[in-house]
Amino acid sequence: MERYDLLYRLYDTFDAAGVREEQDFVDLLPPLDSRVGLSHWQAVADELSNEKARIRRSLPDGDRYAELAARATRDQAFTALDLYTKYGRAVNALVLDVDETLRSAGSTDNEIPREVLHLLTEFHESGVPIVICTGQTLENVKGFAIQGLGNELVHSGDVSIVYEAGTGVFTPGHGSDTKRLLYETLDESVQSVFESVRGRVIRDLPDELRGNVHLQGNEFNVTLKPNFETGSDDAEAVIDGGLVYMLDLLGEAVTDDPAGPTWARAFYAESDPEIESVLSDRDALPEAGVTDEIPDDVRATFDRVTIAYYHADAAELSAVDLNKAAGVEAALDVLGVDDPFVLVMGDSKSDLDVMEWVAANDCGISAAPDHSSPGVLDHVRDTDGLVFDRGDASSMLRTIYALNLLVD
Image 1: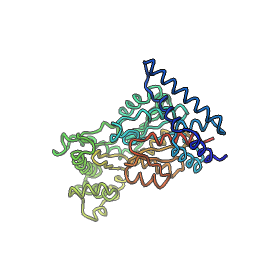
Image 2: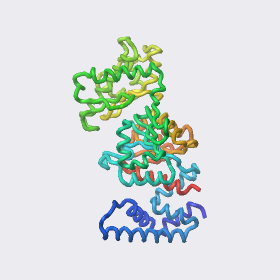
Image 3: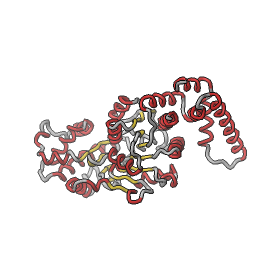
Image 4: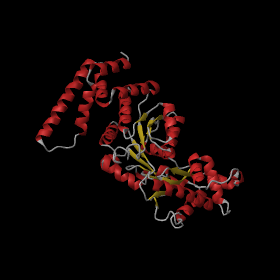
């Protein structure tokens, strides 16, 4: 019997929703001291065992379909089977952004939901390595990873952290490869630009920004953050101003020519519509044709450096050669994933680098929450259409768990 027919039979004949609810209850119920609570938990566990046994007896390859009923909704299971039909492979690593992907300030109080954490543990126990891929600092990521997943899992040798959007990779339990500082591989000329900007960015803050922004504690990237709630009007105002300020610092770091700041504004406005819009709104956009005046050596350095603008959140200076895709490649190398087929989940421009790398190399699939940046959503919809609701990363993890169950 074909797998599609078996799925129809599973979800039409059995109370799969009830089985899944019982599985969630058994998996996610906090530890209990109450005898009554423990007795109820045991009763649910026994009923779950009985329902799974019924499915096993009734369907060919019943173990597989009993687990599918317990882990995935009907829609998730059929999406998983479509992915299996298309790719014929299991996902052998997870590549996961954190902020606004695994956790969302909009609906989960900015904490990773327990359901998501449990699913990550399930993937780990099934032998799927986890790559946490974020723009945050290493210490921040290590803190919430250990708190959420547990010290034993994080230090199991199967978890890697790509931090600061690809400037470094931390993979506990791998000896000399535990920490790879990718920024040390950059040319000295590029490193000197970052040293110059980092040395001045707080010291030379203009009055309108002083006290309103701070420098994120990165090892390499230079990131200005607002001293206001992310997304607020005040945060928007200071980050927009901070973007213009950092463009000018970059121009002065790259060349001694007085036109350096103007060249930097023109160059990055031409390459990024969001930056162009900010400069235009602040009457800071150079006249048309300025980019034609940029000397080749200055342009070559600008080509090696990225200025990223995150609305009402951050203005960030980073190296083109250091991005999340480069970090993920290094992480998979350390983890020993030689023939990767990964799930990438993310919402921002930096995550798009990984998604495009995966698509170009036919080595995985991509998913994104529905509030992601337009470029990310366009890419995901044009590939497999794996868009999930804000704060509902668990739905996509369940789909991929189902995919892996379906693979022989």
